[in-house]
Image (cartoon, rainbow, N blue to C red):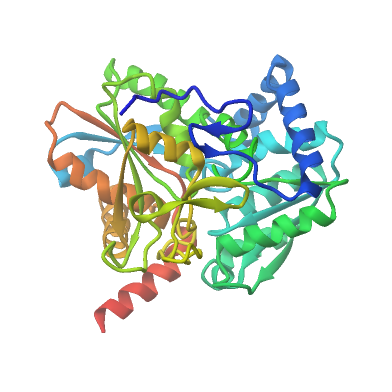
Length: 402
């Protein structure tokens, strides 16, 4: 294996053999315009100055890096630090990307924004920046996710967004993304698709990563201030993969820093009810990019399962696929049971209620810490807050008690 340290993609949008732009011909002009706008703006200091100003004054960055003393003592072993993305305005890492992309949309002269959402946090963040910039906003969300994330639906609507329920398939993130792409095909002239994850057609995976890597840039500075050295390990959950890339990308050249991305193990990898695309998937094309996908023997997409609405996507971002193949990042899984247990443990030990997505990372970090020495350091990305998940956890625990 070769060691990948984050050089991609190539000019066609491929990270090794993953990525690319497998989209209908009608959308290619819109994607080419996006690429041109991104290539122009990414080299303008004024663009990044405005981005950073909004992150500071509106989002509340930098997010803290918190030494979880009680959680460390509970686990035994390595010191556990938490990167507190849950403290951002809107309650998750998603706002970092939305601020950047709304500035892109503004520069391109777009007046209408569309987006997909699973757990609802990207939808809330998109609706929030649309309110700030006075743009029309439509959010596609699967009906299954609407039922389990009603609070976030209410927030989006209060912010002025139209939330469109998607009943196709299992009514989850994959289906919402399908509908958003159909909308974009019909309204490409005035509409900007604000994609929320590390997947999708080129140039989105790179754009999203570049707006999310503020997480890792901050974490690197903060851990040097706290400990005067880099961490031994990084842990983050991965669905599409934006929060994990955000934390890990700035550390990729630091080869002594071990990295763990935690997929949704659902009811266990020995069953079909999980969303571990890298651990159990095969290479295929979905939503415009070549990636690892959950597929049946005939190559048909299998719906992902997770207690977490944000991790049940049946694919993963293409950069993650190359990072997995290179061996630079280790991809593991945590089950629904483990995530719910970690959700409760962090809440009771530190008074921090993590999102169910983030709870998958916490679950693995607790296991990992026990195998390490007390002087070693783990940083866990708490990608979002868990108040949105309280009803889901309550119902899950009630079912488990029966």
